[in-house]
Structure formats: C-alpha cells, structure tokens
Length: 108
Image (cartoon, rainbow, N blue to C red; front, side, top):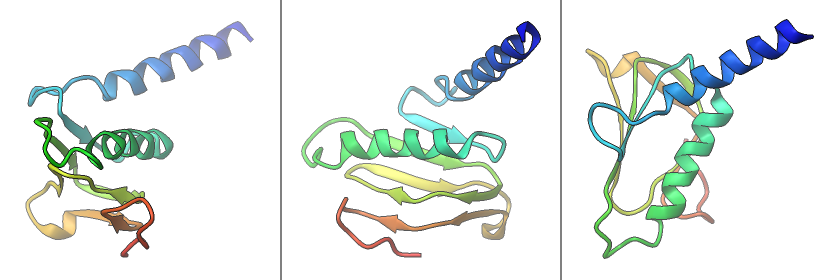
C-alpha cells in the first residue's frame, strides 16, 4: 500500500511538472502525447474560460501540441492560438472538435 502511494505521488508530480511554465512564458501551454488526456482537456478549458469573454483584454495564450495524436475537444476564445508542431502537418493529429463558443457544435 505504501509503495502504491509513492508511485501515485510520483505520477502526480510528473503531471504537474509537465504543465509547469514553459520556456516560452506563462501563457504558452506545450502539450505532448504522454500527458493525461483529462488534464489536457482541463487545461484547454481553463484557457477558454478566461479568453472567451476577453475580446478587449490584454492576455494572450498559445496552446502548442507536440507531434503525436490527441483525442480532445478544443474551444478557442479571443487571442488564443492553437498549433500543431512538427516537420509536417501530418505529424500532429487532433481527433475531436473545434469550437469558438461554448454552445457551438464542435467541428471535426
């Protein structure tokens, strides 16, 4: 039981470490395929909830997906950039949808 708790703590620390501030600044979220898909969705939703009504605000955000495959729905608010990284567009695949409003149908 003790060993299981230690492994859980190590896994949680790794996830938090993965979402720490990137070298590109606090408003740039870099995501890779090894990250937990629930946490990826949660972080993307957090950014959307701030940026959805931020039409005249000063905050800017970028969500960068490293090469790989992701199953997530991305909602994009004002001043938010979502990009796939890699040498070619085929290297990053986002399966799911894209919407610009909370009530919008997701475009796949």
